[in-house]
Amino acid sequence: MNHEHIPPKDEHQREREQGGDAPVLVGRPAAAGGRRVTIRGRSAGIAHCDADVVEFLRRAGLPDAWELLDDPRWVGWQGGRPRTYDTTPPGHGDHGEVIG
Image 1 (cartoon, rainbow, N blue to C red):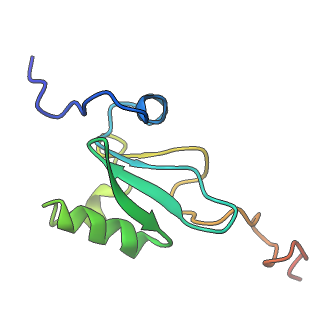
Image 2 (tube, rainbow, N blue to C red; image 1 turned 90 degrees about the vertical axis):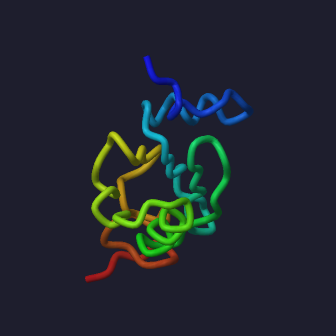
């Protein structure tokens, strides 16, 4: 069995387990906006949009990153909907008012 893609155990083990075996994990949306991205157990930064995640993946040597965002074998989205970067419910503005 090839263990090359299994990230080492560290303080983020629980988050990796929630994202399955994906080498890229996008954490739950923060109240202030953005999601923490880890690649093979190492922090890559805070993403505020898909382009940020793609840039982190490009820097990690994955040039076809746009195609990987929706592939659960590569990217695990934790604690929120995939490709959503804030905690504002759909149909609501920044302060909770419903957008008509």
